[in-house]
Length: 230
Image (tube, rainbow, N blue to C red; front, top):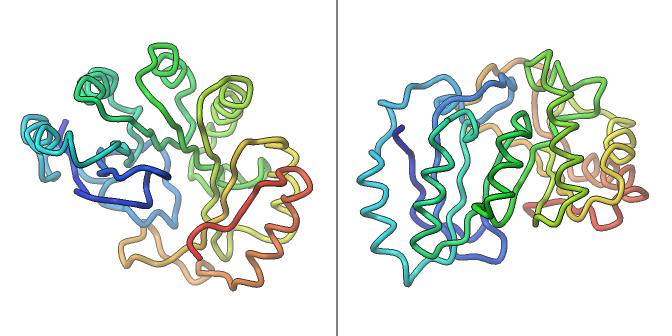
């Protein structure tokens, strides 16, 4: 496995000075994904080998608090637990970003105390999950992941990237009912990075007023819900 790396971030791991590691490959095909290269690319296209990655991390043990691991979908990789174990051995806290489609693998990481925070993308309300994720089989596994986190003690957040053409009034009432009582839920506005997976005319950013309206829909169920990035 090879990796991409953002050497410093104050955003990807809330409350931590961190770096972000990107893995390649994803089992979803969200049309609005802004990391298309990570979804469809090959490991060999990534900049860093495992050896180069850890050479970097060993120089940052007194500078960084944590490491955020994202993708693509990190849990596609069978050797991800070994990678995280080695990162933890250097003293870093680890946050994992996942689409929620591998609850069994996530549960093993939690049980082994290999991760400290989890961020799960909630793509849309259940009725629109297949269209939004590009996967007909996504929803059941995500439901299991949501239940795992909400019934456990892991630090977690749920988040939804809000996209014109995919999200509409009423969707966030259904999301709110689904994740009612969640510790943390964020709405974040879609921005076109120029490298989205399948740009089409119906896709686009919504207004701040649209996001406020969606937030109002979910607030009765998740009082701490917020808009991220403003």
